[in-house]
Image 1 (spheres, rainbow, N blue to C red):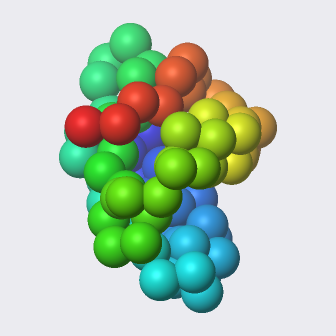
Image 2: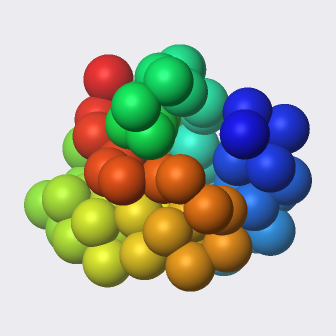
Image 3: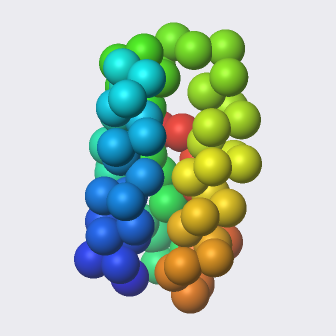
Length: 73
């Protein structure tokens, strides 16, 4: 599952980088919890929670079977 998560994050990364931010994968647990770190402009943006849940989490859940939740590390 880790490799699948990395592949999906690579497809999301250009949109984040366009706004001066990025995402780093921290961990993928056996129970489907993905931990990521938003960095750059995304790390301090007031909309970062929405980016995490409505963007990254939704995309990962749609494309990677077994992902239950995405949380900030």
